[in-house]
Image (cartoon, rainbow, N blue to C red; front, side, top):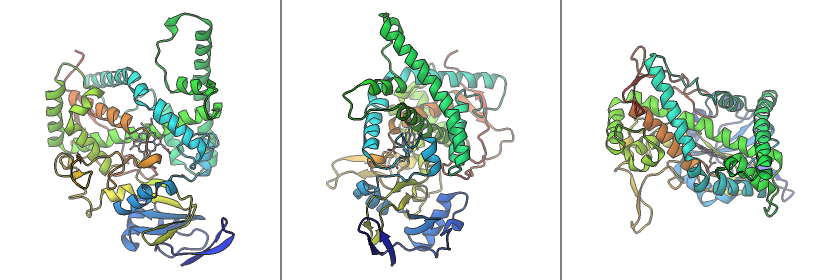
Amino acid sequence: HKTFYSSKSKTHVQYHLPPGPRALPIIGHMHLIGSIPHKSFRDLCHRYGPLIYLRLGSVPCVVASSPELAKEIVGHNELYFASRSVTIASHHITYDSSGFAFVPYTPFWKFAKKTVMSQLLGGRTLSQLQPIRADELRLLVQLLLEKAKARRLYSGKDDQARVARDLARENIDVQGLLKRSKVTRSKFDVLLETILKERQELRKKKETSDQDSIDDGVKDFIDILLDIQEDDSQEIKLTRNNIKAIALDLFMAGTDTSTSASEWALAELYNHPAIFNKARKEIDSVVGKTRLIQESDVPNLPYLQAIMKETLRLHPPIPFLARESTEDRNISGYDIPARTAVFINVWSINRDPKYWADPLEFKPERFLVNEVVSDRSDGAVKSVLDVRGQHFNLLPFGTGRRGCPGIWLALQEVSAVVGAMIQCFDWEMKDKAELDMSERPGLTVPRAVPLMLLPVTRLNPFG
Ligand code: HEM
């Protein structure tokens, strides 16, 4: 039992906290967290149980590492754990928390999330922008075909979005370092201001001209946000900073995650040629050999979908869900005081032999037949174990109202990209060794060693 001062009731309250190691003065348990926090959390949970209490500097934290606890915390009690704590760096980089991914649970967050879910990442916008994504995939495959001709290694470095992506990564790597985050933000700001100004000029031109030719009816994220800003009937008036912060949030949350998932998928496929060949057979029989795979093929490719799920299970790009409690809650017999940082260790749940057979093996087959679960107690509705947040032993996208709004986009797009890599190329390594599968230290889970493979053209869908 520990006594805390409660600012709400203005009294001292006794809490029955979850177990944990002994804390040091000032730093608390900081010294126990290594460069890969989700691994340190797993090791501590092995010693002290699936729910532990830590103090990271002055921040009280709870780590949960079982599906049952995940269900109790972010499922049954989701309303009390729907906030996020704001670090100084993330506050600064996201325009003083004017966005929504890294902010607490507030009316603004609700408005922004609703807007993002229904408009920016809603079905209509995503299908309208589908031709742009298809074009990007075509360009990527063409680039790789050229590399294959020249027998050059591909490391993703030719990507035009590299500058922006590196900036996003820079922020993640230096979390907490205010100085660096200021530099990162001002570089982002230059990029965003240019885009906004161009767009506003185009909108003005459109207003003054009656040419329909400027307007193709397709609106991207910035257009939609500017429309909302100009619409006086909206419950909240968006500021320029809000628009920039929301655009940045989507960019930061969507880029490294999708890259990490496709890179890990390709690395696992390289190490498992039988799985690679099985996926290729499926693509050949569904898509054929005369055209490039596209997003709309993905629903007809169950094995490719299983490969994506298995990749997200073993290599969740965001290894733990980071939430904050807004009220005192009792979870599994222990007290979690208000304003405690709460981490759900998705990565360790995904690798726990209690919940998965052969957890460290890359086996997409587990998602085809074996793990069919019943959604209803009468067994009437059956579905294959899914990644969308209803099965608490597999939460790569989180769950509930604070869950990832980019699930549909990510699953479609990353699957199509990986599918194209399987359909069009064989992959070789200079020395034919097994790939190094270690993770790079940090808060997301990129590969420690960049994936360097040589594409060999197997099929040119354009030729
Ligand atoms: C493989 C790709 C992706 C993975 C694994 C992933 C995973 C996640 C996870 C675990 C969370 C936290 C959820 C929670 O706390 O319950 C999250 C939040 C978020 N994701 Fe994704 N994500 C991916 C792609 C994307 C894409 C493509 C976008 C947008 C274009 C996106 C936008 C966001 C946003 C804005 C949030 C914050 C939501 C909020 O705080 O309410 N993500 N994502």
